Length: 272
Ligand SMILES: *[C@@H]1O[C@H](CO)[C@@H](O)[C@H](O)[C@H]1NC(C)=O
Ligand SMILES: *[C@@H]1O[C@H](CO)[C@@H](O)[C@H](O)[C@H]1NC(C)=O
Ligand SMILES: *[C@@H]1O[C@H](CO)[C@@H](O)[C@H](O)[C@H]1NC(C)=O
Ligand SMILES: *[C@@H]1O[C@H](CO)[C@@H](O)[C@H](O)[C@H]1NC(C)=O
Ligand SMILES: *[C@@H]1O[C@H](CO)[C@@H](O)[C@H](O)[C@H]1NC(C)=O
Ligand SMILES: *[C@@H]1O[C@H](CO)[C@@H](O)[C@H](O)[C@H]1NC(C)=O
Image 1 (cartoon, rainbow, N blue to C red):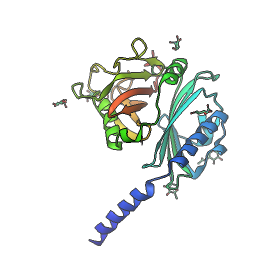
Image 2 (image 1 turned 90 degrees about the vertical axis):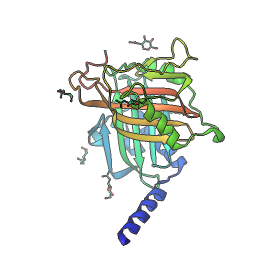
Image 3 (image 1 turned 90 degrees about the horizontal axis):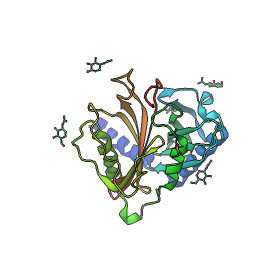
Image 4 (image 1 turned 180 degrees about the horizontal axis):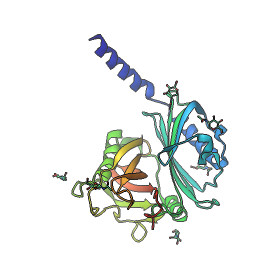
């Protein structure tokens, strides 16, 4: 009895404490972009023991890509005030070494220190990689704040993204797609020939895919969610394994408007 009351209180306390300030998350994401542009970790407010991983490999942050400067042509971030988390997409097309990078950061409850950074980093040879194409298309899209009276709940936004991923495991499941809807995979854009159509619909994969290990960042104000996940099947050498992947999704009135997929080809044999 005492124990269960304690657990309930601890649970509530954790929920309340986790809500953090949007402006602080915006500052953290801006600092992240500047840190990556300059290759200077000191521009980021890191916790003492910030965990850092690139493409699911934990590593010492001082040895990572974040410690090297990259010319960034475009960046887009979303802010999860419930989880104290940010997500940022970096498009580096004119950099000496082009990249498209998706990064998820977790902050402490005060929203001031970054406790975890994980990135999916794609470059030449990864799935449909073309940073020039990515830059061209992402620049044309509108991910503006959703008017307050039209905002979806976190649950609706997450459900839309989950439905999209779940459909890969069962092609008959419905997916709430808007018309228009466009998907940017690496640098390839489905909306290229007909921007007013719904070009996000997918056929069935040759076998059902279970997309596991989903980690979300959800922003009701921007109607956006990013789902870090393991993408199965793509690697011929790992038929039952998965590769690092994320889907960055814009939802408007419950319907998917844009999808950006970034997926790593670990053995460099799936992107071509
Ligand atoms: C960092 O250290 C704090 C305090 O010791 C601990 O609560 C937290 O779990 C640690 N975070 C990570 C990512 O290891
Ligand atoms: C990470 O690398 C830096 C620079 O070489 C080093 O000072 C630090 O001790 C390393 N941290 C860990 C946890 O290995
Ligand atoms: C990131 O994007 C913002 C606009 O959203 C822009 O003001 C800023 O200069 C960009 N940062 C870099 C390093 O490109
Ligand atoms: C990359 O995208 C750009 C812009 O859409 C296009 O001009 C170029 O041909 C693409 N490159 C490759 C290798 O597909
Ligand atoms: C696929 O989804 C449909 C509902 O659309 C359901 O009836 C069916 O049982 C599912 N199939 C599998 C193999 O889970
Ligand atoms: C993958 O899973 C299938 C079905 O469980 C199994 O038959 C096959 O041997 C597995 N392949 C590898 C390389 O593990």
